[in-house]
Image 1 (tube, helix red, strand yellow):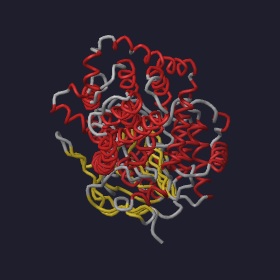
Image 2 (cartoon, helix red, strand yellow):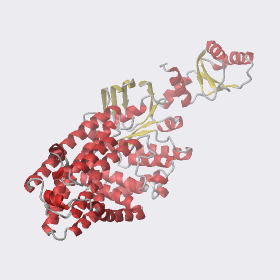
Image 3 (tube, chains in turn green, yellow):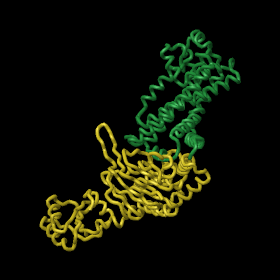
Amino acid sequence: MPNPVKLFYMSVWRNLLTMTRYKANFVFEILSSFLFGFGMIIFAVAFDVNLLSNMVGSTNYVAFIIIGISFQSWQGTALWGSANMFQGELSTGQIDYRFSCPFSRYWYIASNIAASALQSTLFFIPMFCVALYFTSSTLTSLGVFLGLLATLLTVAVMAQLGAVLASLVLKYRQTTAIFSFFNFAFQMLTGMFVPFQLLPTPLQIVGYCLPITFGMDLVRHHVMGTLPIMSVTYEWIGLVLQLIVYAIIAKLAVMYLEKSGKEQGLHYL
Amino acid sequence: MEPPVLCEDLVKVYNSRKAKVTALDNLNLTVKEGEVFGLLGPNGAGKTTLVRILATLLKATSGHAEVGGFDVDKQENKVRQIIGYAGQDSERSAYWRLTVRENLLFFAHALRDIPIKISKERIEEIAEGVGFNDRLDRHFIALSGGEKQLVTVMRAILHNPQVCFLDEPSKSLDPMTSRRVRTFLKKYAQEHEMTLIITTHNMLEAEEVCDRLALINHGKLRFTGTPAEFKKRVTSKETLEIGTNNLSKELELNLLALSGVRDITHDVNIRLYCDDAFEVLPEVVELLKNSGLKVPVRMVEPSLEDAFAFFVENAKMR
């Protein structure tokens, strides 16, 4: 029986082969990531430094927004990566062969998301480095380590959400609008662009359920020294709990939706 | 020993808001070990549905199906371990930007758990068998439709499956490649004791490769037997071929009304199936002449295609 690790590294190998085969495009993607990191400084001028200071305990609006933006790399992986892969496989008929092979559907999706996430890292790192450059006054080795650990956990939670969204494709075939909905929620309700503390309480409750909120807040706290939205310990626990809950939901969703997809056939009708 | 494929009262109904379509209707079928088994039938007959159920891609509405002794519904992972599968959507069924070799390596190692070294050897071996080794390093996107088809066939047998399902494997192949592939598949199946189930519209392929055939029409099994037995259903009737396919309805009815004429089929020419063609011939010529038609009429040996047309057009068992 194929194992997920093998599927993961073969998927990484496949993605890297595909990416690096078109060298000019690959180089410019990395460059764009740097550029995007610096480009975000433009938006930062619109920040009210006093308000930011009151809300998050830091006036480093540049790093605040760049860290937020860098998380978008993972957002794409979780929301579109695996679901787009499934949609592509459904429309091209690839899914038939894949699903006639003996492996867990959940691990198939998770391995592909992991490979895709690793690919996204290439575009996360330049932006994250730009953010670190602007946080040099508050930066510590432990801070970087904990920031990266929080990022890793966040990506793992996002991957579970990605698996749920990918499995939705098996039943509902066309799910672009669902992605857009989550995309909006991720951008507006997690503190990506504006401090989470500014959101009204009902929206904050929704934000607590989204995987990025705690992860991004922990990264900002450990790297920039911002005030966390709740106790740091609770945020770590929240992130781990999210991983467990989303993983269970993802496993059940994949199982149920594959069964459901098999009623009508795993292809566009 | 369990048969490689067993279907008992298999039913598949596709439910949509607008209609219910019965794709398989109480189908019973047994395929023997090591057999090359052909599934024939017109478009929409239910062949692909059957193959997809057996390949664990589709759930039957009712009935029971086993592959290699494993229940396709309850033991699907065990079934997946022993099967190979190539579907009809082969044109885009691999990674476009990877080469054929890279694609096959990914599928063999990542999805079939074959060690990389063995995967590489098997890719070479199979590619040589189907005459593809000179194109292994071409990008999938750069291949012709037939070549892509061939890649999916190669992929289906890479891991030496016990039972392999090929859904119209020669659909886009040129005659020479088609011949090479069917010769290879037949030999490969024999050497590796693989049971091969192919759906096809290519009667030559069915005749040359298949040990036994099943004809499915409107989801029902109409016939199972060897290609020779299949043809015999028609050859027991002698055949007259009229060199046109454009007869008036009235003339067709008159021909059918002749004593000893059993059936009529339409293709490039019209074929009459008779008890004694020699006896009927003068009357047929007379009728055509009276209608002002000057077309050749000859006695012919029926082909597998005639047998197919005979079954499908009449849609009933003889």
